[in-house]
Length: 165
Image (cartoon, rainbow, N blue to C red; front, side, top):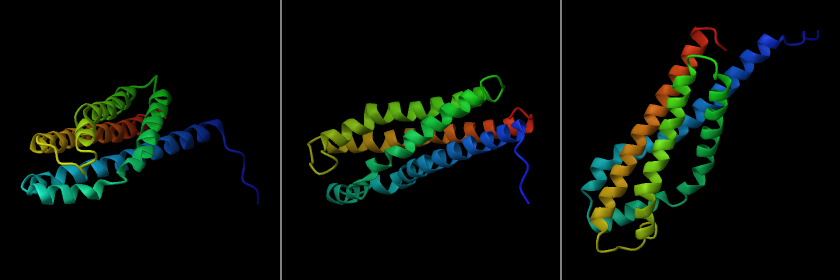
């Protein structure tokens, strides 16, 4: 038995759900990495110089997850466009701004520390200052990613509850 063709409203709901699903999964994955940095901070600040530089080696290759950020931003932009005439659009905008703020923190404080230490393979004289900069910038980035994820979840719930999808 053949299924009936989808009605336009059904397509809109499926598109809504698919766009939010991609945005939420990408946002959760991005937040997961940020949260890992935030949770390890107290233990890493007490490490000796030698131990700290050894531990930093676990992040080699994390740059390859940048595609998750691209998916997250693209999906959030799609959510924002999809909700542009709805009240939930404000929350989608907050989510996108949270991701932008996390990136601003990364490129302003985290990345320069990576460059100064050649991805934590060279120990400069100011390594302790760079460690503080690196660790606390990741903590701030995690806060912004949490804001983005929460705003996106609320946007999804609001758009479903009000039937705006």
